[in-house]
Length: 267
Ligand code: ADE
Image (spheres, rainbow, N blue to C red):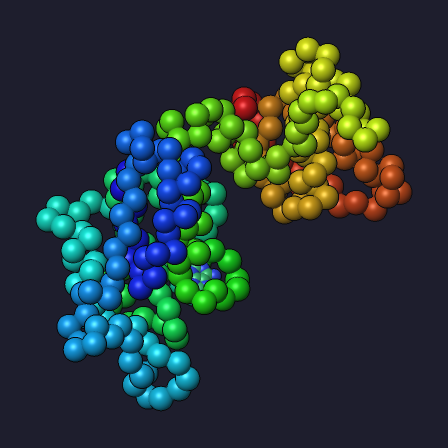
C-alpha cells in the first residue's frame, strides 16, 4: 500500500512516519509513505497557498490551484485508490472505516489549514472527507497521521503478530480485556490467578467476561447486536444477572440483547 500526504507542513511527518512500527514497515517494503509539499506547486509569485475568502469572513482559504496540481502529481498516470480530505466536517473515522481503507492500493490524504480549502479543489479531486472526531485541530496533519497509523497497522506483517490486530478493542466488537506481564506481584497487586493457570479455555472465558464488563460499563451501546457463540452468551447472561442483582433489577437488559442470527459465530 502507498500512502501519500499533501500538506503545507511536510516537516511534521518525519518523526511519526519514520519511527517505530511505521518506520520498520517502510524499511521492510510493506508500505510506503510519500509526503508531498503543496507550496512548490503554487503558481503565485511568492508561492502563496492561501487567500481571503470571497464573501468576507475571518481567516484564509487554501487556494485550489496548488492543491489540484499537487494532487495530479500525487496521482501520476494510472491512479487507483482513494483521495481523502481530512476535515472536521467529514464522516467520523471508525475501525470499520480503517479496515475498508486498508484494502486500497493507494491513499492520498489532503491536509487542510486556515478556514478550509477552496470548495472547487474538493469538487475536482476528493473522493471523501474524513474527520477523526468532533473537535477542531489547527490543521489536517495530525488527523492524517492518525489515518496513516491506523491503516498501516492492519497491513499484514506490520504488527508482527496478526492476532493482536484482531483481538484488540473494536475489532472484536468489545473493548479490550486487561493485560498483565511480569512480575506476578507488583506493589502488592497480583496478576489474576486464571492467567497463570495454563487453562486456555478458562483464560479465553475470563478475557471475554472482562471485555464484556468493561464494554458494559464504558460503551454499552457497542453491545447492541453483538454476535456471540453459545459459550459467550452463557457468560453474557451470567454477567447481566449479577449486574441485575447488584442494581436491584434496574438495569435495562433488553436494550443489550445480542442478535440471534450470528449466534454461532466463533471468534
Ligand atoms: N482538521 C481539523 N480538525 C480535524 C478533525 N477533527 N478531523 C480531521 N481533520 C481535521
